[in-house]
Amino acid sequence: MSVPFRFDTVLKIRETERDVCLQSFAAEQSREATLRAERDRIAEERLRALDELRTLQEGTSWSAEQAIAHQQHLEQLAQRLATAELTWNEATTQVTLRRQELLEADFAVKALDKLAERHHIDQSRLTQAKEERDRDDIRRPGRAA
Image (cartoon, rainbow, N blue to C red; front, side, top):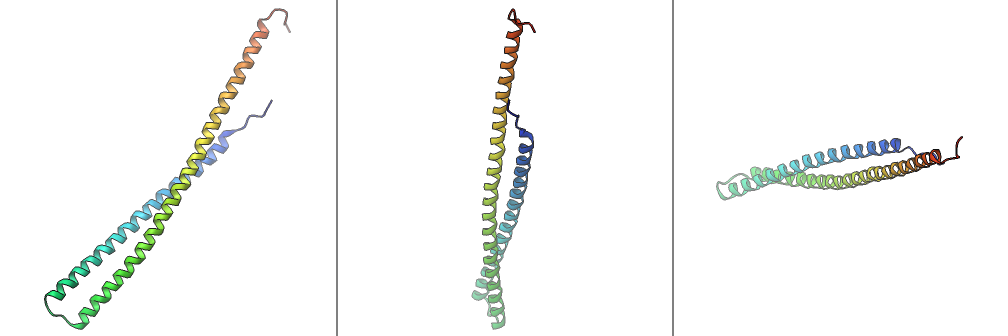
């Protein structure tokens, strides 16, 4: 007779791993959303600065210092935007990786659930067959112990 395999411990470990993956995925999604909002905020600030520059160039005359300062500010915004875009892209990649890890962990849990269910069904069938044999042995005449 084979030793019954305990699925509970392995299943709990896999479920814990899946829960950790889910938390990691949620945290990475939150980080990605925050970075996207920051990127969008910088892009909007840059667009406002560009519009302001166009308006000032069309209207009044302003000093060279003002023009240089405004141009430097636009360059800083462009650099911040490029950095924010790069960071956001990296976060998006991490979200994709965490999603894949979560799917794999969830698949492992479901596979173990299915395996445990099959094992339980097989064990129930074996137990039921044994009980039927025992009943048949008891009912047969001349098979007294």
